[in-house]
Image (cartoon, rainbow, N blue to C red; front, side):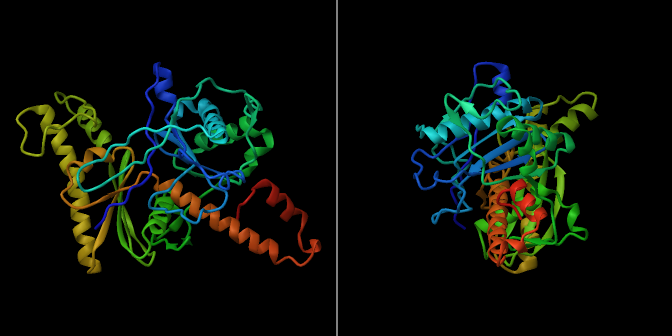
Length: 383
């Protein structure tokens, strides 16, 4: 099974502790065609358990767009505690994109089985918060109204409110009404939800399923996302979601051992485990044991899904904590760290197309009610 080469956002080291916490690196392609920038892009936001991540995507899907390796125009992330700097970061990325700022950094790969990351310039924006209404100008640059704004959110009402206030900072008070929040449903973008109660499925997992199906249509997939929690999703080639599993992520697993025992230390999931053999000291024993548990979860369910379907299954690794597992797995896998925004983009593009069809079916202005008009203004490009 061939590994794809997905684009990936990675943090740029900053000079201060505050900057390290608030400014994830923003990426833009080194040479973005002018036609891509002719229309304002989509703003896609993923509020996860630890961070708020964002990406700018072309207003219209480019002919060479590949969901398996999405070329977002810019992207970044901030910790929840530093959400007030989100508007600053988005504005800086958008301004750099408009100026055509270029440069490159070298990515790294995880193991011989995969190739991940793409070369892209990185920007470290000013992290000072902005007041509401101040985000429209940056050295003469005015952020245009986006094609639309889509959000996945598993962090609660406070995170959604933070995103709405970010929009107000960039575009004024009324812009918070542009936000469209994705919720799991029975079916969307070619994926059918197999949950007993479809709405119970987390919106980030739902977006990941949509993004993965768009990336590898016609393939059976086992989608593994490693973050605060580790999720394992089984997606059939025809788009049927068969269900999933949720377990503690690597860091949470290590922290629970440190907090729940009297003598075991709390370790960092990024520490090297020194191998996979039986350990001869406590630190390595904890690290290797937790990684073996994560790997066993993936490998067992991959084998189970292949046996159930009677066909090859691509294993996809995603999430910020995937690097630790990538060194431990014995099965082939593909890395992709933009599944959620890739799924959101698929939803946004399809929703805009549906809205255009509805608008085109109206034979005269009399067929459009005032409420329709308000909804079109309130949620540009939305369903």
